[in-house]
Length: 165
Image 1 (cartoon, rainbow, N blue to C red):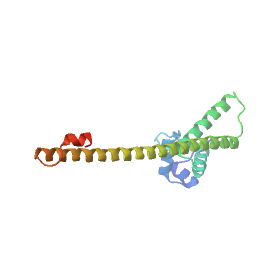
Image 2 (image 1 turned 45 degrees about the vertical axis):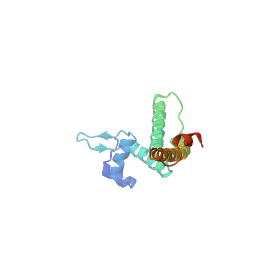
Image 3 (image 1 turned 30 degrees about the horizontal axis):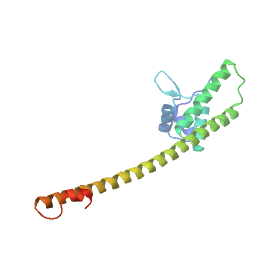
Image 4 (image 1 turned 30 degrees about the vertical axis):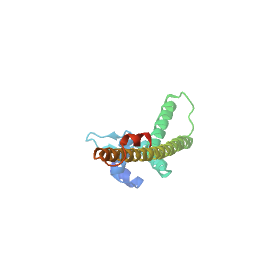
């Protein structure tokens, strides 16, 4: 007979808070069996999954990487259950999932670096645009001052200013 644990027991066993368990269940889409009242009933397999999640978190993997690793593990379990392929022991699965998760983290870091470079380029372009706008405003103001002065009969004409004379 399979033993089930309540959320409080699992939280204590894993050394985490109950709200963390609920968060992991929701974000990682871990399906936890429930009793007739709707209370969570964690199996030994659920505990193994949660331990794996916590190990991956300790290795610095983010939730997206862990979710992909769990999906890979689930696919491997389905293959194992159907007997289509000889699946390696769970330690090798863990290594494979960690490898996949590390690649995801590396890709994420690469994308973040590219994003930072794009942001720097955008900042430089915005600075150039601001400088050009200031220069344009300065010329417009100079032109308007000349035009006003010409209207009052003072100073050189705006037309000579435009021609550069």
